[in-house]
Image (cartoon, rainbow, N blue to C red; front, side, top):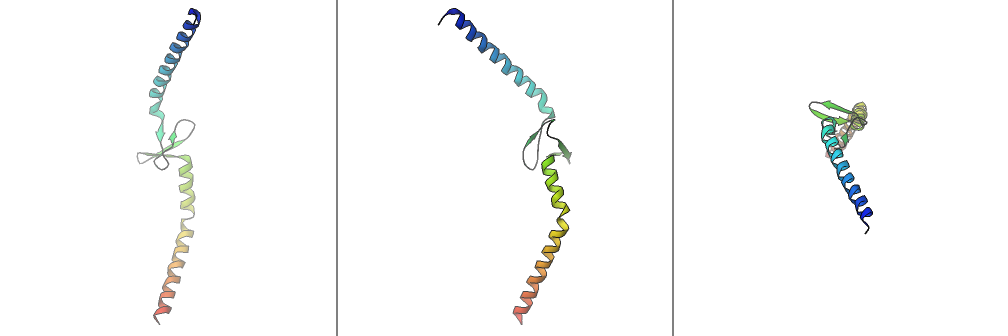
Length: 96
């Protein structure tokens, strides 16, 4: 291997190490702004909005799913109530 080629490989290796250390320093600096969603575990940063609720962070997707669930909660309760009444009527009719 010629001397010039060795220097090029050495320079490329050193540059790669320096870039790696810069990236590590950047990540350590930015981890303060990163949060993990309590429900799905996704790591959120500036591009993925997170909401702090009670000391725990939730991503926007999980909050949307929770909202949708809460919006249909009355319908679920009505269906459960109907199912309970039907079971009770069936049980009553079988006792006779």
